[in-house]
Each structure stands twice: as structure tokens, then as C-alpha cells.
Image (cartoon, rainbow, N blue to C red; front, side, top):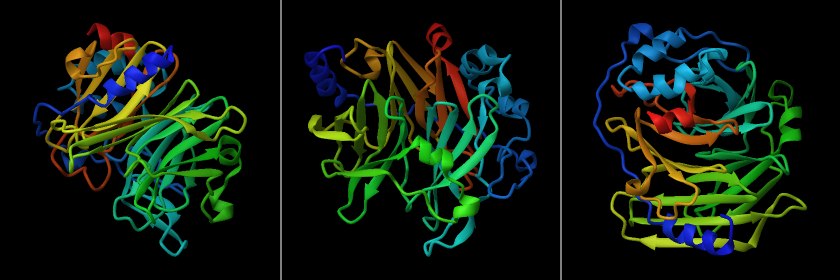
Length: 364
């Protein structure tokens, strides 16, 4: 926000946002076209479901916006701006005893752009293995390596602080059953090699967020970290904005901005992600396999983030998770539908990160 007054107003009104999924869908993906696994040493790097990008595009024909604002604007770029989500069939990680073991139930959650990388977070759906970050090349779109995280966080969102060069991860304080936030220095991520270390990459910094029962979504913008939690159980929403200390990149918890509200219809777990750039605020929502997801785009000056006030509400396939601005007019969109836990639900599957052109989304 451009002023303290606007910031306070934004957060007070943000807590009133209630996104809900819409039209039911049942589109079965034939098992015959499931991609065959091509395993590398640490992870399968092929797409989990569709052998080719053309097959993926055909499967998304019910969503013309994905063609108009997704594939067509990036037709001259590598894989039309998409990034294959690796590791969904096989990821070398650690088990509960920190022994190296393969996991076949990694479920993708977060996506972020960090310098020359695209980062994807994933957790073991069976809760038997350490969570991971997949590192992809932003330019070539190729898999680079896997970062095995310390523990088994849901890692529902990740964010990058380009000033301090820290990768933030939504974590959890299991001892106190509250949310937490952690970061890994990008330099340490660069140096990490699981094939040699056979150990998780420790967080460089972690902080408990006792105000939050969980850390459901996260984003970093303008030297601040946005953390939020939505609950269906008590129809409540809590959102906190923490200033990032310029000296060390850590959170200044003495300067947090708080929003807390109760009694909102269907807010629950529907809000999966928030993203902010210099022009817009973006909210993603999804609610299971039978309902479409919604991406809402708001003017930066909008303080009441209700779908009725959105500049544009866009219908997308089920199980949309985090969204993340590319900084050059695009928005990365992450889906969890291709994980082994969800791919047989009978809904539309997306096994790639899809870049959406913001200008084209607004005009279509």
C-alpha cells in the first residue's frame, strides 16, 4: 500500500474477502495417455500425466482462457511458457528415520520465481517423507535438482525476497500447533547437493507465528511478508503482514499489521493463494475436484477484495493452488491435480505450471 492509512484499510477489508469455487466439472482423463515415467537418479522429470504439451492443451479445451491467455501469448517460448512439475511419480527424499527413500505421493503446492529459478514446493500426501523443493531453470525449463526440506511441512506457499535473496517457506510449529515461516538463503540452496549430502537442507531462519493456527498462504511484496490462514471450522480468517528487516532479512514482529474477522460464508479453505505486483492484487481459490477454481484480479487501489469488486474473475480447472507474478506481465499458476492422490478423481488435470499473461486475462 502507498500509505500507512491505505495499508491498514487494505488489511481490514482483505479479511472480508470470500472466494468460493463455482461450476461442477467431471472430465475423466483416460489412463491410456498417462505419461510413462522416465526416472533420473533423483526424480522423474517427465510430465506425470500427458506425454506432450499438445495432449495437455487438448485436455484443457473446456477452458478457452488457458489458450487465449496461457498458451497463445507464449507460443514462441519454451513449452509455451509452461514448466513440467517433476517428481510426481518418484522423488528421492528421506523417510521418518532420515533414511533415503523414494516417495511416489508428492503433492505440489507452492510456486515462486527466484532469480534464475522456478521453485515448486511439494509434500508427501501420506506424510511418510520429508517435503521438498523442486528447482527448475527459469530459462530452459529443465529440472535442476531437488531440495529436501527439514521435516514434513505442508509447504502450501513459498515466496522470494529478492533484496535479501531468501526463499520463504510456509511451515508449521507442530509442538504448539501454530503456523510458522522459515527461509533458506538462495546461496545455500545453490550449494546444496542431496546426492552427496543425503541430508535435508536446514532452514537459515524460522519464526513461530502463534497468532496463526496455520500458514495457509504467503507472498512477499515491497519488503513485507504476507501470511494468512483460512478456516472452515470456525468460519474465521486471520491475516498478518510482517515487515522484513533490511539488515538481516528476518521478520520484524514488532511491526506486524493484523486483520482478524469471523462469520464469513464459505471462506474456509477456499482461498489458496495471494499475489501482489505493482498494478494488481490476485487471489486464487479452489475447493476439491468437482468445483472449478477461481482467479480474481483486483486493481491495486481496491480495498474491498470481494469477487463482486474484482476487475476480473476467471474460471480455471479444479485444484488451483499458489499463484506468483513473473515480473514481466505473467502470472505463474500451480495445480495439485496431477499428484497420485488426486489424479483419479475424474476432474481436469494440469501437470504443468502454466504461465498466464495478465493483460490477455483482463481483456478476454
